[in-house]
Image (cartoon, rainbow, N blue to C red; front, top):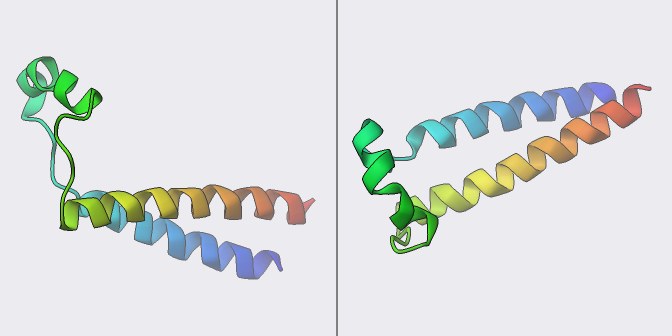
Length: 77
């Protein structure tokens, strides 16, 4: 069981890294963090199209990553 979970964890980790790298940058360095950070915080810029798909995929993969990690920690003991 732990071997299957370890393989799943590696696959989900690689997919999560890939999806995060594919996402476009939201700000242009420090100036974007100061001026444009509040707009993203309060949701004035909504994600659309591919950006929305990547965002949702990141959420799903991160939840799966932590679920597999907790299950792996439970079954190893």
